[in-house]
Figure (cartoon, rainbow, N blue to C red):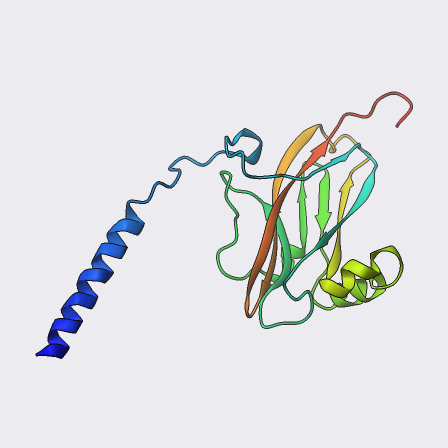
Length: 178
């Protein structure tokens, strides 16, 4: 009898938790990062002009090497939300749109880059957690139009995911910068 009562209490508690989660105040209409009212987020901006390439360094608590997970990936946000469900695909290390190419190292390349960064100016940080580059290039031709692209960066490992968002802004080249 006691076992049946325990099962009943467990099921009732599970039902209450399920209802609470289903009715939680979640935004029903997501918006791009640039238009959010959420004042708790800090969104890094990477500004490039046509014909320019910039390397941005990120550090992460997760592994950046070979794991059973998908490794590093980058993709455009979809309605203000990350596009990944589960693990990314192999081709998610490169994103391209509107004359902008964003590349993250794959699982074989990331540990080698991290090892190189463990010497020099980043040695102190690299001893604490891995460091890896994200390369952003704006085409020199007409495809590189002034645009802002909200991106999601993911490091999917077998023991969990680390992630962040950032925005790439392609600014119009001013005279003398072309």
